[in-house]
Length: 363
Ligand code: ADP
Image (tube, rainbow, N blue to C red; front, side, top):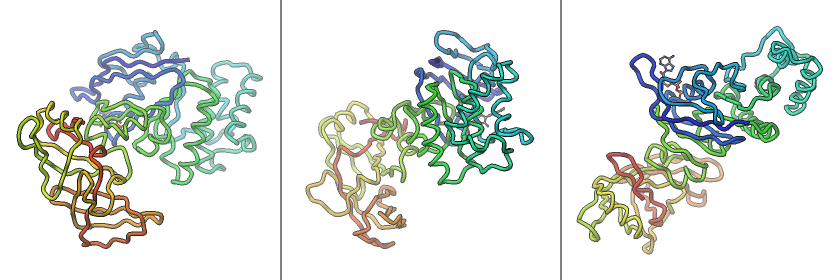
């Protein structure tokens, strides 16, 4: 059992600050994913939770116990890394049993745990093999097994699937979630892959430049991103943006975009007026652009096709407008060609508005 709480956690390496004001509460049994581009501070935050990095400022709690100065060995955690770190000269069984033997756990108990974990991971037939006699996926399972047998309160996983090919990654995602449900420990999982984050996390923590940008369920992050960074990072293909200027005052204020006709919804007008922002980015998700010039739509945008990506079931159409580039998901029933002129329409409620200066969501 462990609830993990970070309060105003900061990290410096020498003079360089790499984590800023990190506040986060992870519930007992929760599966939380830290996601962000390379260098955003995910691994550093995970290593702080593990006790492998010293906290420069702020507090870390496991349940109600402050653990800032508690040694790694006394935190009741198990880690799984990208490089499995298996002992090449030991069998699968011995790799899993090694840590338990060192802790003087009775042999019968070790045997029970190792066989239980092997069963859970479909590795029971491979217990006598050496790591080099295993596939990448099987090695990753051994690394997971070694963590499971410790029966920790907290699992910490750092990009555990990034050495696997795409197909196996998808399979192992499901497997890790199944294991997590079976062992009911709290899990913190680091990845740079937003699809992995979206498919695995009960909640996702999006990081950028050492700061937590937003914490939420996959739905919350997708539907209501807190800022332009989260909006563009979450979702495939990514949200497109066009740039607009607010002209006029109060009720008569209007968003003006070259090449776009636009009727905002009332709550959007109010949010814009409240914010005082003049420079606005409008974000549109690819599936919200409907091909065609629908006169009754809230907005219509015209442009020229730059690239068409054919995916079999559908196509991603990247096109330029006077105010920026957008991407649309279009059915194959409407084949489009590069250089073709296109018009898309849509509903106002599906537009995301951001203050261009601060990047914050306006409505
Ligand atoms: P991520 O896991 O998101 O890729 P990291 O947590 O590894 O990011 O790194 C965050 C920042 O901290 C990066 O700018 C990185 O260069 C810096 N950093 C990480 N470890 C060290 C270290 N031991 N010494 C100095 N800087 C470091």
